[in-house]
Length: 290
Image (tube, rainbow, N blue to C red):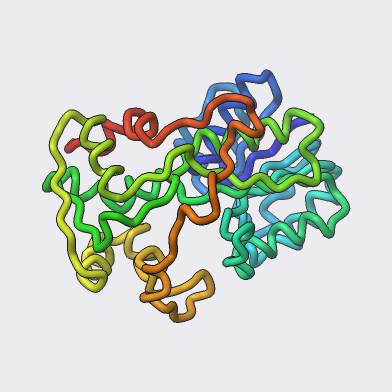
């Protein structure tokens, strides 16, 4: 029996695939763009789209377990198809926003669909992805050696995507994780300014930190396009998870250290969580000009 990884060419998904291959399991990788997928040799890559559940029929044949990328609109239908096909365990890529009570529209419906199916389940809930900084700051670092941000002292614990993948892979490969929801963060609380310093150390080049207003930062991200443009309002505090207005003053008064130490992958894997400095080193080339 095989393990199906949906969203297999994403930042977490491709690392889940690699871990499963290393463990000697039969892996199927579902992606909307199978050529070229850039996945390990021996992985069966199948074209499919979670937005169109009927496209999963071939991918689900003889599958015992599934890593599920979150798509709330079709989660119930996808899970129903998986159960009918004989899948017994689903590991969901969710979000720490569910743990914090911020999300009810995007990740929580996927979690509930899996729980209500009667199948074995594990939810993996990463907080802020370190990869977001590559999407947000990468273009200006490559082009100008600068980061323009409205809040240099804003801090959180960015998580390495490989830590998220390691936990997901363990939940697929091992018993003992069913019925658990793992919230994952990086091991260190770091300000934006410190994160930029660590990226500069990793690439061996200075990066100037330019403080701008939230409005200026939003304009910059919208001009940048892609992930930055799509998420500018939320990431800069103009919108909440559901697209509603936020109280910016209350947001600025939040103390991220008040809740105490954040859980990391080490609590699941037994291995120290990867630091932001390690992440910056792993992605240094992507911050450099072509």
